[in-house]
Length: 83
Image (cartoon, helix red, strand yellow):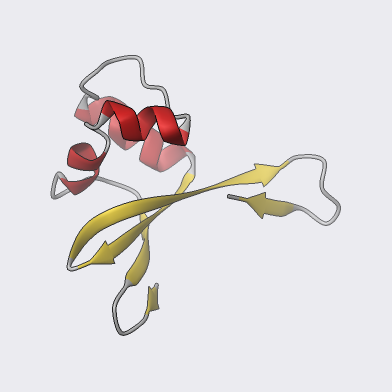
């Protein structure tokens, strides 16, 4: 977890309070982030599966305002993560 005076960034593994579902209910945001789900609106099952299968971090300013998605770079030496 990273805390600053204005923001908190923390790992997300489940959407217990519905804030991630609310954020990804915006189709324009999904398109801009190149995120695709098989259902729209996203089901809680699919959303929780997504949160458990990639490195997702929530950006909070009292409430969730954004997501950081990190993915392994398979051919990097040494192994690395990319945004």
